[in-house]
Image 1 (cartoon, rainbow, N blue to C red):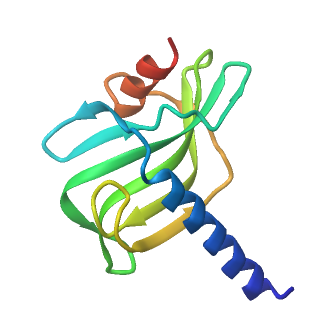
Image 2 (cartoon, rainbow, N blue to C red; image 1 turned 180 degrees about the vertical axis):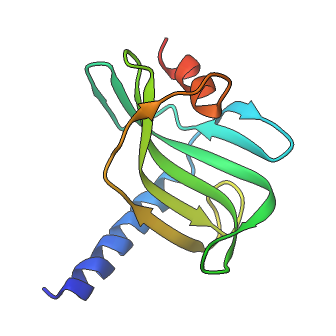
Length: 132
C-alpha cells in the first residue's frame, strides 16, 4: 500500500467515524459571544485519571483556515487528565456547517501533549463538568 493510499484510507476512516458521531447528544459547557463549546458524553476512553472524549465548537461567525477555507464548527478529540488538571488534543476536524455538519474543510492529527488547564478557560469549564 502506497503512502498516499494509506492517507486516503485514514482520511476516509476518520470521516466515517466523525460522521457516525455527528449525531451525538452534545452537552453545552460554555458559551460566549464568539462560540459555544459542547462535549459528547459518550467517552471514547478512560485510563486512570484520564478521560478521552470529543468536544465541539460552534463559532458565531465563520472562521477562515490557513488554506483560506471557511468553517463554522470544529470537533476535537480531547484528553483531560483530571488529577493533574491538564488537557490536550490529538485530532481536529473542521466543518463548513455548525454542529460538525457539512463538508470537512480540514483535518489535523498531532501527538498528544497535555498542558495545564488555565483558570477561567473553556478547558477548565470542561474539566469541571467531566471530572466529577
